[in-house]
Length: 185
Image (cartoon, rainbow, N blue to C red):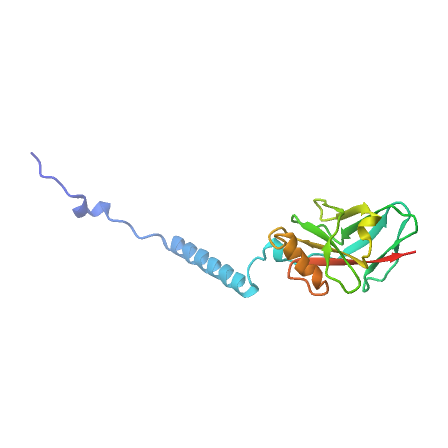
């Protein structure tokens, strides 16, 4: 019987050192990964879609005997309801396509009153356009129509939307509150 040889003692089984180019390649990859991590840290990292600022919205109206008064961008839009109007439609179009899903809640508010849920239909399209339709009677005693728009994780409920509708000039990050003043002929 021949003596057993141990692999530990075999000089050919020892690991050969890596060639110098492989060591340099590893160092370069590690350095690039570290530089990327530092860049993300300094820029605050990627922003969740729901916390990005929504684009501005342009307001237009269509419907039976309903006009949208022309306004400058700094003032709120005005929905002028003519006598005898029975229904209305307000479209809120983003200045650019919103790249993630948004939801919208519509409220009405009296001159100095608390916003309340409006008895209207609010539909959001995939590009972020919001369409509000309803009977003129749903706007009775209302001075403003307020539409709160945001990602579903920011606008988790009607209650959170109502909180933003209370202070339309300073909505939470990632939300947009569009105010449409209601005027009657």
